Length: 126
Image (cartoon, rainbow, N blue to C red; front, top):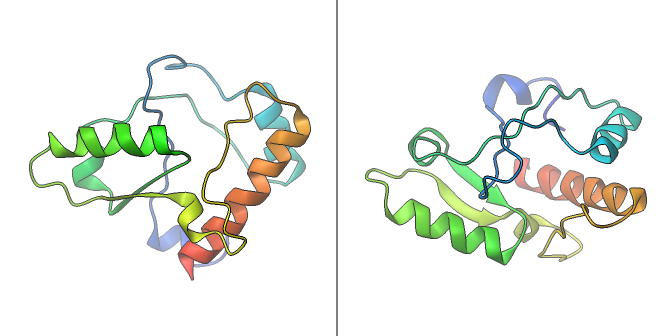
């Protein structure tokens, strides 16, 4: 993961939403519990993707087609965009292209999303 030796030194990693719904809020308690279970430190407050993200990040990876569409539309309005916008699931060795939002699901759904994200991120970093 990103916390492995060397990775954190080479990458700046952030998380942001395409919507405004949760801005300023901490992650869902089930997501926090899942991260804690896996020893992943979290100090995050929800924010929305900004125009500057498209010029400061090399990659913006998203979870589903709706996010992808929103991000590509926003990227078109930014001059000098350098970010490549793609589905994180594109990198999944198990070919699960879409990562479903676990919000309306159970603890097990958060675990499934965690596992998908780990697989995808490992493949992306390789």
